[in-house]
Amino acid sequence: MSFHQLGISHYPKLHRQLTERDISQDNPSLDVAQDSRDVLIERLNSLVTQLPSQNELEGTAIKDIHSKVDQIEVVLRGQDQSPKSSRASMTTRTPNSPLSSRGNGNSGEADSHIPAEKVFCGPSTPTQSISMRFRGEKQPKEPHVSPFRATEIARRAEKLAENLAKTVEELRSRKDEVEETNSILLQKAHEKTKTIASLEQKLESLQDDYEASQAELGFLRIQLQAIEAQTSHIIQDGEDPDLTLSITNWKTEWIALQEKFGAKKKYVEIL
Image (cartoon, rainbow, N blue to C red; front, side, top):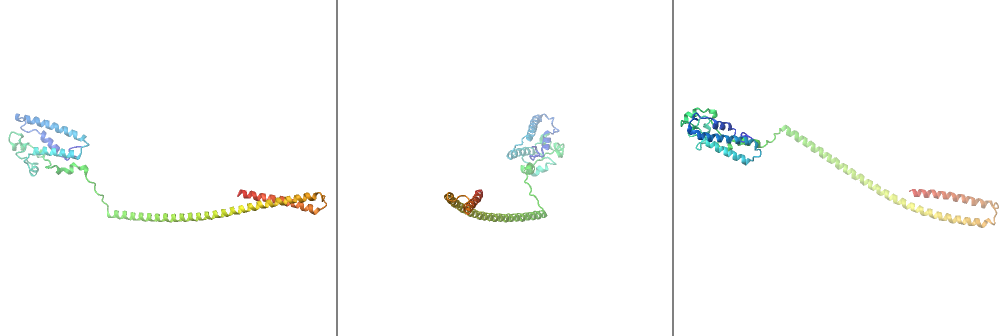
């Protein structure tokens, strides 16, 4: 941080006024004032070296510093000097100025030896340099957009909105298709469930028929064996060829039926 950032751009003039040696500096009556001025210059220089390191100064502290500097300026210009006469002091110095009285009493002669560029002039009030003091706190300017650019942005935004609307419509359509497909699949699954239930009922019925047939065949086989046992001691082998052939055929058919029912039973168990 520097005096220039704080709005004190005229510090070199202040320094030159305080350090400039008057033509009457050899006057013994001014030795005390000269010593006091040297001490003041040292103090100001010390403050100047400390200011750059004070990065955390708040706005209130900066305003207080400005106020103190303004008081120093008022003292240097003279308390009875108006803002209008302070502007005129850039080219000439008033008789009652403290700096003009540093000579041997001849203020006009003393002023004639001070160059115009070394005459001190500062702001009459702290608000005159407010734009310099708070240069880093300017409000950001609003971005300027040309009509063509604004039209282009509006056109792209409208196109983007159309694309978004189209995408939303497609998503809704796909959602309806998915819901319809799910409904069809659920309906088919329900129909398949009914078919499976019907097949299970038929399978149970076939199982009952198979068990009944097995029982009937077993009963017939027992009857055949009883007939064969009853006739074996009456009819010798070969005496009645027809009976022997019937018994043989029945046994063959019985074996075939057993194999057939066994195959169906295995198929039913697999299902």
